[in-house]
Length: 234
Image 1 (spheres, rainbow, N blue to C red):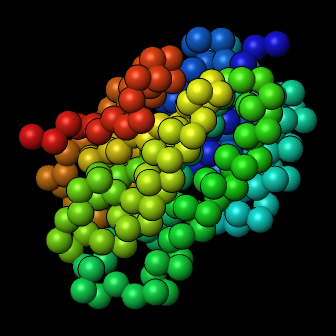
Image 2: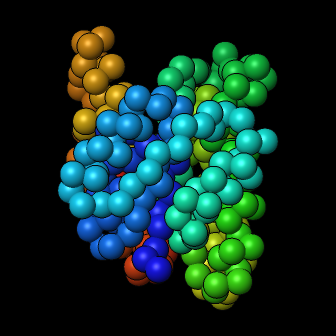
């Protein structure tokens, strides 16, 4: 039975690129996102390229729904071998640290920390039994390098990054890999980059999602480090 990657937070940027990169290697693909119409379009695009794909509409800000979601993916495909977790909240913006409050953090914690933890809990028994599996999590550069006036998501993603490091240290000997890719730029072809263009925001560095997907494939196959940063800081 061919392997399966589940892409959580699938979109037209990184999610599609990751699905395509792993699909070229024979993986079947489960796409998870909130909007069904977007999922249907992505499934159709990948199917046209010969990649077996199915969509699973879900609100990833509800960690309590993760077990049922993972069960649905497993029922459709029979297994899950790799998880790529990289959703971005539609209202996720930056807040200066001096103006940060508990309510802002509470709004970010489910999507960026609690749900990925629940995803790992849901797939870990299968991976432990098989002696193989990989959890790949996308974060922003502020999870690694705090910046003035750009707080909010950073502290929460930093907590998730801490979790991934600990997870990999605990599970590597069992054949299970956990890694994080921290992206310090806008991702081309993504919804976020289109919104920025509509608002006339420019001057931000832009990266090709295909480059990020290639990095994820290298991380999955090489398993020689927990974290990659892209673009690399000067």
